[in-house]
Image (cartoon, rainbow, N blue to C red; front, side, top):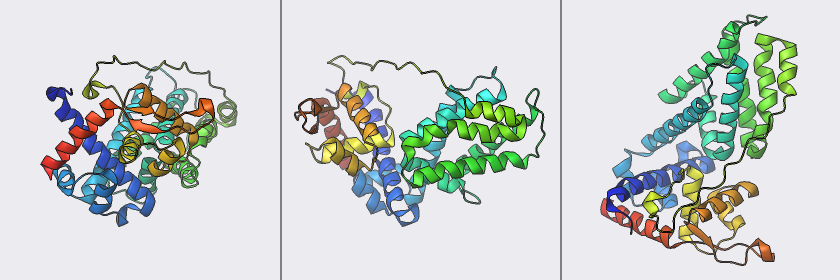
Length: 314
């Protein structure tokens, strides 16, 4: 059984994430200006009452999605920040973290970067984040031994160019290739401050392989409310798809969840399976057949609780 003390917060957050995931998916499909509350609730599988219990309207939901994205991106970058490192190393670490997040959440990234490339984003949190990024790049002028002193506007130009290159990959649905931009972008960024030699070094750098942490296993008696999982928009969307129809294959889940990369959907489904939220009821790839995904008992219990919350909020 889900413990009542924890379930309210957990399912409230899950409902919120489902709605935000639907907002991002709908915006990626038809543009944020064309999205209606009905589109969002239909994709999320919640009532209008549940929606309005959490958001004032469509624009509020959009603002919250972007604010959450900024907060997540900031947390990722800060986690990699080393105040003792040189400027170029700090920039590289933050850029690598952001490229990883954009690869995980391409729909959300397209939404945010499209706003960022506009004259004014109309989202205070995003405007502040862009100003902070420009300030970080501008610190290259004060790096010890920097041979050049470009004007402050150079940082804004570099930021706009980097965002434009990333956005072009996202529009082309080439998010899987985004990590390959790390060296070229770093070369572009350091050139005006540290010169051609430093730019060539960044272009040719090879990063050491990072250790892969083993998946965390949970006890069989752990309740759904206690499952440790980062509810990204993609995660929420995949759970919605499997809840709506059991027996879907990897490719079918990916198509309905809006995930174009086969490797990413395979990793995500494997992670959800290890957490005990879904199970493969088909023969699987070991026998050359497609997987067939369904919610587990824990997943169904979680969904029943969510449904009750939606009914009471209607």
